[in-house]
Length: 282
Length: 308
Image (tube, rainbow over all chains, first blue to last red; front, side, top):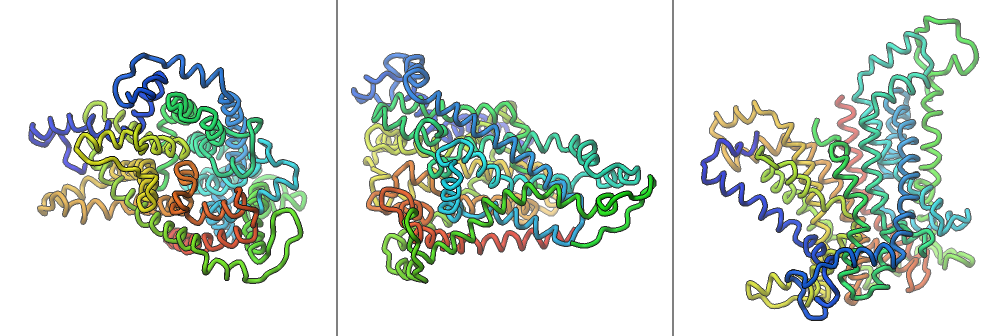
């Protein structure tokens, strides 16, 4: 193990390390801690210049209550859910199919189709912006959640296919061959042999895509406007305009907006990290 | 498409055309939905954008072909030049996330009690949306209310208005972007460090390698796959930077924090007018820059595929 395990170092360094850890963490999360403290302060603290001191009164329920009952925030959150969940299902489904095709079968154009997905996934969004917005307008899907979902599914398919294909490549190929010898139809091999083995990859990908889509801002701004279809990332700017300079409410609002992916991460940590670091080791 | 290799079938004789060509046809059936979606929403729009960049078009009326005029105009557009330079700054300084992430990963790669929670909490900024990161940092930088000036005041340094200063603002935004990106690189390296071969470390110790020499000659070469991924995601993140700029400064002060992706959006969609053709031309330039990296990434992947 590198660096030297702490148990094997002098006692003095062990103690230093143990006390350094929380200090480093607090420094690392300082901007966020400041926002969390802001979000439980009363408005009067800001007018009196008590920015970083202890809150003069504990207003957590009041501030968060305002966010939930006195703004469009719940609406934006619901939109985000209605955009994110179908996208996750769509992208994971398409990429399971495509990943199976690219991971199991050997045909000449295999690597080129694969590279098309990989390259498309790296492309800057901006080159897609004008045509995709136009396309969405033409289909009558501008400012609808469906329009956003369809695009997200298509774009995420690039990354998901890369992920699934590499995962399937690492599965024991003998299983597929054995099934073929038994004369099992190809789609049955997919459904009964490969899919059960892909469960960890599906879980990892679902958590990742959930986070990516929930956090998307660019496409939300390009393809939607207004509270009827905007997700929370875009909605928060109108929320902040509504509560201009009310830092306690804006802080509470952004914490609420950030919460679902954070919860997702802490609940599904193992899958999340497995997904992110696939390929980081040989 | 090639003909299928012979498949040993122990069951009945092949029946129809599909049965006979099952191995050749099945992959395309499985690929069809993904390819259709991807071609429709990603591949075709790239081509369309390139075409639009040769037109003068407001997004509604008739498009007028103007050849290279958009690109000629870009050549002496001051705002475009600023954006290009800022993109370069992003590319360079964003890469600091890689050594930063490695440093934190080395710091946390221990087995003391509670280390798992420390690792997740260090990683956690990556899960936040860039919008939230942008808001958090713009409040952190606020001249009066921000914590940064509070801390600077404690050590006797004057208040700075990071986002209001044209020379400092871009660096302020990059610093905000580095926060989640470093967390991402950290998690890649933590995973990589887990897989480092203990025998090689022992062998290195026996040969007297310690500290930096050990890190440089034995550990870092073994972390190559993690470094490659960290490099890919950081470059792409740097060139895609949009959310933070839009949230933190909206391109200001005096347009000094614009990057290509943001300037393109401004030209094509925001209140500065609907110049789709000009916007598309900016996007094409950005795409060409990215293409250099994409080609390199694909080339590395291809080499590895062949090596299998």
